[in-house]
Length: 288
Image (tube, rainbow, N blue to C red; front, side, top):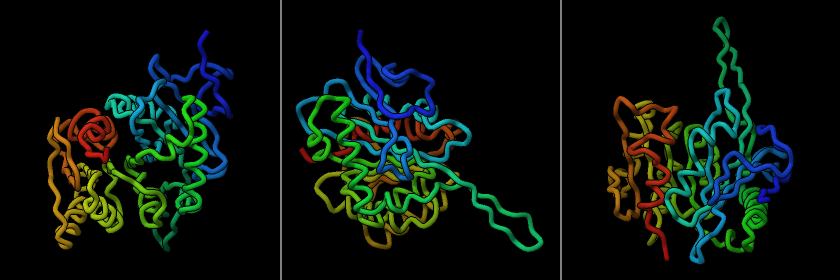
């Protein structure tokens, strides 16, 4: 009888130890495990990998989720088809998705109704070179455990960031602090607050011989999307505004996504195309 042993406390799945993950297929393995080095103390991290990796270079996809809006972390990942999209690209890729816990901030103003804002709890230690390095080391060890591959394969892998919505916050912190060496970046309707950190990161990737920075946004974040483009133009950094299926792309692509079927809630599964993570991984140029 085949089973996947799941270590740690599973908060979101009512399963007994040793039961198969609801994300698992005949071609993949996955686990949701408490990490000592997660964004917050002992929070959950989702990992998924093909059962058999090809001998060539591996890509690690770090997925930074948005606000959960009442859903569980596991339900959000399943609805957004994060692992399925990564595996669909056939990019010899694995997934690491840390869970960011949320808190409500209340700002009180005299004679006015208090403003309530949902944000991620403090993850500042995670976003430092030391903190992120410890997190990735733990993730590499867990990926090695579930795949049977040596941890060094994941340590030496290409690192790609996919950030959706509130995922802009940890992405910005990682880029600003110089935590991690990222080959490529996909921002999915994550154009919030100042875009300077993202424009700088995109410019750095554009100077490489490989890698792709895609900044895709809906009309909801149009103003910040325009700010991103203006920062690139002011710095004379070239970019394009379309993705051509079947072609390899390097550099920077900024996409304004419009249409009656486009909305922020479903942007991870329906943006400029269905399954945009799959599209991104297929078209990005990567050093061989």
